[in-house]
Image (tube, rainbow, N blue to C red):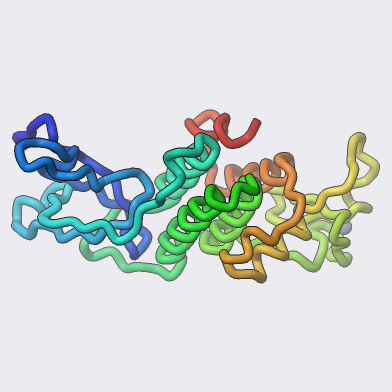
Length: 248
Ligand SMILES: [Zn+2]
């Protein structure tokens, strides 16, 4: 394929939750017609694909016409928000399957699109509010993603003894796929309290718009949840480029 300096190859998540590699002629913007650069990370676009036989043979699709439906106004001006956006995009890229014309679409996959679009919309709102509740966004994104991946742990009973779980005395055990009670955790050193179960329940029951109402999320709780995701997705921490931007 011939291509020029201003052409662009982008990766997009479709509304069906699959990812699509897209070739955009003049996608960098500029040129004699001074076209704007509309393909920015995290933007929501409506794209019409070129339909020809040659096009469908390749993994790469060609954009015929594209229009911006939503774009963040503030994320690019906040380094924190930008880091979180990069992290969300990287996870979604890892969990979503490649686009295929005849792929049967599952409800789980469609959920990825909702999680990503909500996460970026509310991240943009966060920038306007100046409350810096970044960890709330991390918690919401992960719990919602875990739900759509079909990995939601049991929240009422201990994964070992089936006894009831206490809200501030429960620990998430990735290899068991659920929470453990205090008794089963024993008296391990440094075992304080953990509010992860409480946060998890809150997010699980609420819509994304409640992201600003979650209280006192700590970095270690967000990380505990991330370890759970990594374990179940079988991804190594070292394979994540953006992890150091988000977890300190
Ligand atoms: Zn137990």
